[in-house]
Image (cartoon, rainbow, N blue to C red; front, side):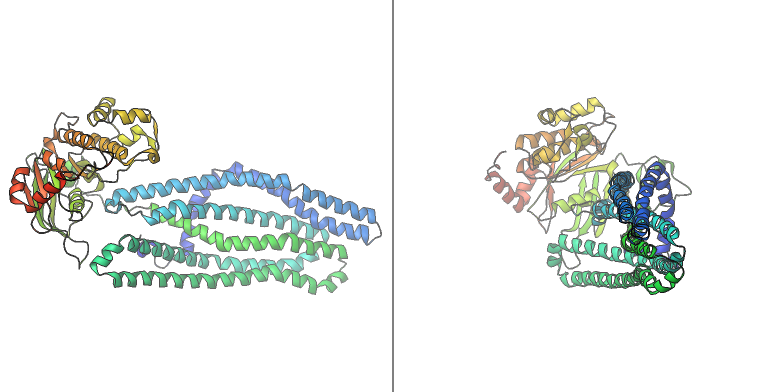
Length: 616
């Protein structure tokens, strides 16, 4: 997410705008949990009774007991105070029980929202769904959801404690001597007002700090993931400069945040220390007004033991956890708002039916056309693919071979639409990939990489991931034609729960192949997707895809199969073979390439004399 995307609207304070955006969903969330709030208030009211009794009983123990020479009466009042302290255990347990009824649903809702955001981003920007994780989405799903839960729980606890302790303490002060309120309330209200005035600016500073922190994480992650490419392209200086700017910005935002934290400390001092000081200074005047010694001791008890600690905790929570909570929740709100593409006022009926760009796919166009494609991984690096032309006919089985790092996987990425070439055009079924949506691409091709993806869920969920409407007959056929029956049987059948950690690399690949076989996409790209299978299983899989039948009865002549070859046998089974050698690619049958390509002859000899891997 760019910095511009995270910035608030011009002219509006970021903290105030975040408050306006998040108040309605906050009200809806709390309105749906009124019973938990009522129970929480009830338990907290019992706790405030203990606060009231603490100061009041001490005052009575002094005035009516010890200072009046009635030791027994004084001890009795102290026993009542002690009993109230011991009785605070059950109310506190009730408070924490109701707190869980508020915090856990909030966390679950945010996790669901973070998952929806990540999935939406993967659909709208498929080129980023590679081995490098979207660190912003991961941060929201893990670190930031925990920030929200912990901050919300701490905020509820501290605000609740201050409110009900303040109720008990202020009622106690009023019961002891109304004059005490004249001394205590003014500095208390002044300090709270000063503190509240810093909340929104501090929220803005907290938001800027989190934005800068996430930008540093994403920038460093990108540099770490691509350090070999950066070195190969000679781009270390530029990457270091960009990362340095991100770190400098994070440092500036942390300093601003620290200044607002200092102002918060001043407000805390006014509200937390000035009432005690004024109470001590005005003691002679209070005594002249008839305030007793016990009442003064009780007032100090209310201030030092209940009101001021609760005030300190609340200010700390609101100033740190509160602003952090507001900012992080607002970031979830921002990420949820996905841009809606403008609707065409004159929609094409064919395009509305799902055909890319509104044109019906040609029944005579080749399955794949690569026209003058050039692609490099940096402005100073040599092209991996240079002015490449390739035509794959419908129903054709193609193998791609070449040395490691020559560009075979890059070609698979370009043909599948996951990698945008620097120049040139790629067409699938006569339709260019430029402007195709993620759904368009999914309807036209399926790519299985070397690292097969499986997830926790049932075997059926994994196999039907690309096409949920598969019939039981089609599922059984796919499992059988690819030779996956023993694996599915060992796992407990299609409805058994699958644990990816218990699968070998070959088993993962076999399940991914079944999933691709069941998809409705006519073009299949296998990028070393069978490298962990034994040669017999690999041959069976490639034959199955070459003869793959669709639900409408059409055979693979409507699409094509492109295999990035891991073994020579894959090239021997293909109709034609593309040899990438970094200079002049060669394309032809196996027999033709043995005559025309020295590299292919070398690869052929190498593969013939290489023993099969252990366990094959």
